[in-house]
Image (cartoon, rainbow over all chains, first blue to last red; front, top):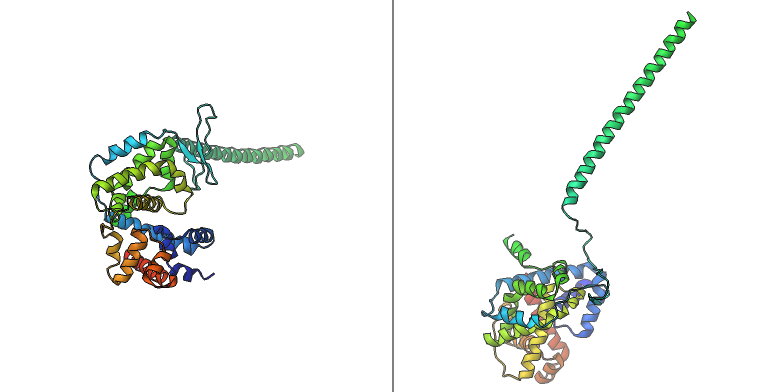
Length: 159
Length: 164
């Protein structure tokens, strides 16, 4: 497939604006993981679309937030997180406390105290390494001295 | 640079929203409202010029889309584009149910189509604002489907050109 021609057909814009037919959507979503150019064209268009929306913002009339809050309050406030393969998962009171979360980021989040701990471990490791090297050199030096003394003793005995 | 900073402050990534949703749907709805309500309200006004009616639609959109946020994570679209696409479906459902006479809302995307012919603008309006099918338009205007599709493609590429 000539992906440049496909992009020039306006499919990216059509998809992002919700004008694509179900068949076009299906085809686009199948191609998306295989063509980085297509992904880039979509991200680029989405970025500019969002920028345009920011530039054209109109605040809703006062009271709209409260009306939405009232409506959302009617929805049970259960945590809903991704489980993968498009399935949603609701935590149940009687169920297990573990909630599997799929995160696309390759990074993991840890508490910042771990940073201090890891720095301390790193410094301690360096100190131990330096002490080991020092004692190793001391040992070799002592060994040499012992050998020299033995040689001297041997020579003295011969005389 | 400034624009990039602005959009970075405004944009919600799927991971951010996921972490809010972990605490429940209300915090997630609150976050979405804080970031996107003004952007979506402006978007709605191009379909529905009356501010009261548009505000009612915004309430409807948030209350209907909040329980469906899992779909946003599964979608290939960004959170904002997903909201726009899903909002348009709800708006069209409302305007088609009401069977209202055609009213012209805010220019919005039409401000990007200024260089197009009246025919291009008419076709884009019918497809995008009124949610009509290409086949319907082809039959009404006596043109073939490829002609209508070609005009839509021209409009979309002009929108991209003027956005970027």
